[in-house]
Image 1 (cartoon, rainbow, N blue to C red):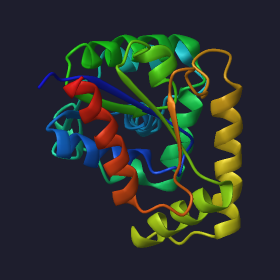
Image 2 (spheres, helix red, strand yellow):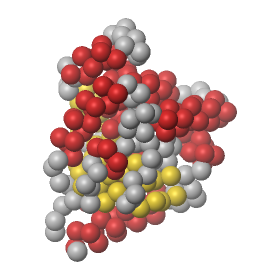
Image 3 (tube, helix red, strand yellow):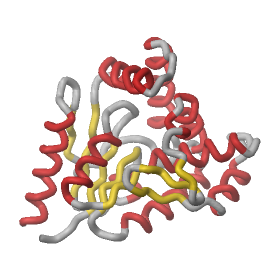
Length: 220
């Protein structure tokens, strides 16, 4: 059976990471979380005292970084930073560094190289429109703002963070505005993407639907 490239886009809290990881496991594909790449850059910058507004400094930092995904973990320069970049504030840092065009252009180069190998499930904000416009299967995974806020709230609470639901909702609105309002690489649905509203759907149902779509393409 042939192997394809699968692009999954959508806003924060839609379930992209979990769904993409499970689809990759089911199909025996490589999983790439592009959002984690931006969070890793933001985390590294803050750790080194580099202002998130300094585009050229961020670009130099990115060029010296080595990111890979291994068994669901995010490895940066040989160190497992998976849990560190899941902190609530790091998501905001990643969203900020992603507003810099030079940074996004360099990230896209790295991500395109990852996606050039067939048998990959890549998720993010601009995968189907910018990074992998030729992907055989494109998914736009969405959910209502209320559902996304609830999911994010539960996720953070389960990770041990003391968060307020209203604050979580506010953060999501702000990130939506940044992601959709970027001049380049903005979050939007590709014209040939399959739209899936996961509001009220179980993860298993979403994964099974995408897996079915992928198998149909591979068998065809």
